[in-house]
Length: 552
Image 1 (tube, rainbow, N blue to C red):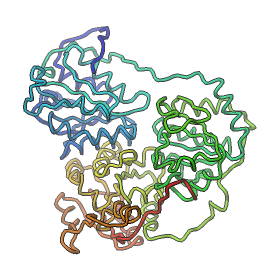
Image 2 (cartoon, one colour; image 1 turned 60 degrees about the vertical axis):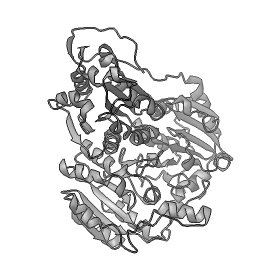
Image 3 (cartoon, one colour; image 1 turned 135 degrees about the vertical axis):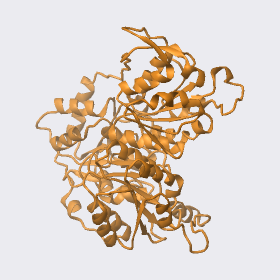
Image 4 (spheres, rainbow, N blue to C red; image 1 turned 90 degrees about the vertical axis):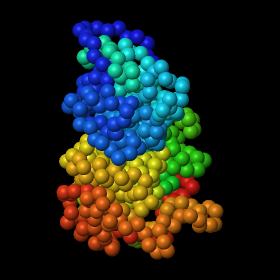
């Protein structure tokens, strides 16, 4: 895709497109870029070398895009990655898909063969803009040097506007070296959806007044809009409980008296589901009703009405038709609702005392996550990929603070967790960053431990080792009655020597034999001085409790 011409204003000068790329990134406040140099992006790297932007050399292109994604989610800024053409560009696809599913503002810059070679099957030529169309908000092939600055600026705006998401810019080698007219800080505005909601808010207030047990379901959109404070104020004004989707974990303190926990069929808390099941009105803000959240739809919908608020109008009515749908940024909606809400409108449907006081018999895995929660700093950032470790985290891990729970939610990407942790640490150097990973997932992108060590970006990797692809094994057994090719042992009972694995990257290694020992160890090694793997054995038959519907 290319843009129409935009009128140039003010003073301009001619510079190479490659230089314009870097200058525009600088003026947009980009502080880091993750990538690997290659033949088709060397003109850009020439100018990157002289830039204030810090380049972080990853060990795989997929690692670069996941790191950019982790950076974006931890900071709220745009994450940028850069690769050469051909297989380097196609290695970005999984990471772009991951960012797309979770609304993360990532901009990927790829090199391309010379424009006159396009379509000839030249060495490392690939039509990457077509390949990524389904996993990006937009993809641009720049063939006109004159339009390059406008397209780059537009790509950056698109990544952050409306519902955030990834954008790819593909630049042929000859275009990078061509001259273009560059103007500093040319504005390019993309307007989001703006809905007049006067009548809608009257209907919303009436629906709340007529309900007995309303509940707020806070989704990832609340986190993206930075509306944690406003969400809590709304819950306290109405005196109603808040439950979260797994992507919004941390948006409200876990010990807040109106917070019941996650709702869903996998990454849920028992009490979150219990409070939801008692509700007769759901105010869903910034969530897209994914299948792992709703489970069986008829059960999820039964006996309750729905107000659905989302910035993306395509999400309203996509899964089911709500009673009221509002296209709006989450924070804007909450602020306006607070403004018009009658002061005496209080529903007094709080989290029941028996739920707050209830003590359950704890499994060993819940004790492990409790030990992690209680023995790390309050503002710890957690990154997770997919598998039992993510489901257990959704059920048992306590997270405090916005942008501190970074996971591959929609895509479920194994290998996301470690490079995402590297990116998060680059963006928030003062934070403790912890990647929770299984013994299957660590080998997908564990090579990025080298990146964390090289750039002195210490991350803690908590490795849960059950010797199995645990979630797949559980699914095979439960749904199909067999177990096949899920054993990760190398030869009989021998497994990967993760101590040697850590040492090979000049990282530290420790092993804990119990949840108590894990807690002692965490208190001893925090604050981290270098990247560290802490391995703890998990019983191979340890399961995750899941359901096909939202039940308590």
